[in-house]
Image (cartoon, rainbow, N blue to C red; front, top):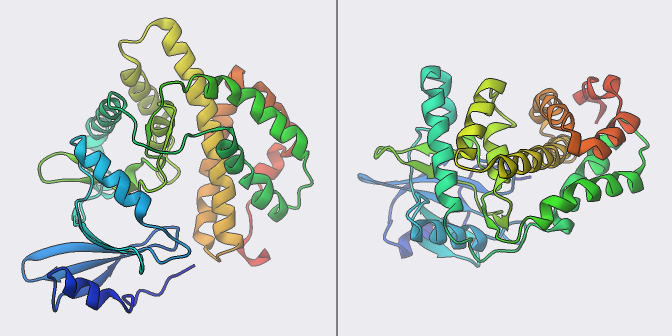
Length: 330
């Protein structure tokens, strides 16, 4: 995976064509994909240059969702220019005031900011879903399969793949059946993808993988954060805040689906983080696995996840889950 932070060869001409002649191009933090980001500075103007090189990346979904979110009055970056041939996009710069670092330094603001993230999701769920592919069984299955494809081999586990698929199909069936009026699911909605803007709005980033799906998914993404500890007390308070106004039956069903999608997402992330290590040499992602197992086990405790919980007990026992993957063994 790309980690060279030299600007792409086409960047200078691209910037010149969009009125940023002579701009300074500085690297900024990337993510777990092939995408790279640069800050472009010309006098008192700033922008972000996204380098999403084909064939590994396609910036069109990001552009599509950014424009959809802006049209619905959410703070997604404005698109200043695009070159789809080279995978370059010039974006509005939301600055460096990120939710994650702010809360690291100002923990007293935690409840207020998380409440704001729930308000945003509640507002998004009141809007028509974007024109997107649906979060269907095939997509859910592809994602959970990342665990037997990557984590299990690294841990030298020979597991029951047929039973794995059957268990997930059983628990996901009612979730999928409830997605008759899907919402826009950003899919990576968490503290490291939220910018705190000067106008007190939340700036949204990293939503290019959005799908039309279940309202619980982004709530799980925020409240069971793979990279930041969220206390059980805060998670419950924010979940209840989202559920305020629902009937007891509706709230109970939503909590069930929340746990199911939490387990689905956390299973997927264990596979992804293992792949980032085993395939891409990014050993730092192994540090997140203990948190992911804690989150997954919490979700598996829900009675509606019994088939999946039984599969995990029979195929990945506690002593394996707690056994760290040692970087030297790759």
